[in-house]
Image (cartoon, rainbow, N blue to C red; front, top):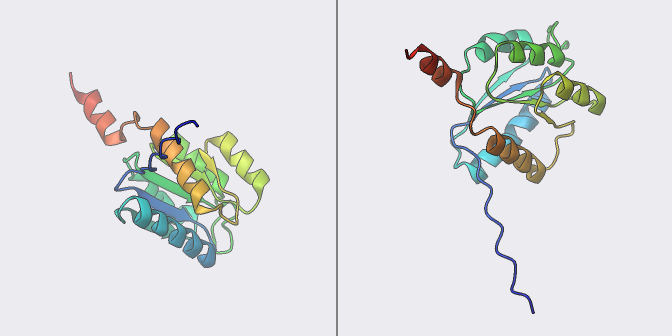
Length: 163
């Protein structure tokens, strides 16, 4: 008989990830927060930090200040119920315009909108209801594994200033 396959290597996600959730539904923000906190507790020793915003307008000043590639931004598309005028698509265009270094996740209830978000620059498409934890972990692991050579914007700026 063939020897048993080697045990699967454990999935490793970076410590210190910042998760930003932008959704006008408090219930959806809470569901996303709880899911991401559980992933953090299971795989990253609970070292992640979290921020929640009901509109793109409320999130923009916070997002503008992010320089770490260890950031995941989860975006709904329709954000008008809390007075927002900008959509998830607008947020993705904003993030790409400022060379956002982290992971942009479409978290729309409409799978077609999620596909459009990916075309605009989102890295992942998690249509609501959110996928199971296993898929979310696999998607995040794939993103960070393939973007680990991306330096933080602060590191890029420091390197650019060296003569």
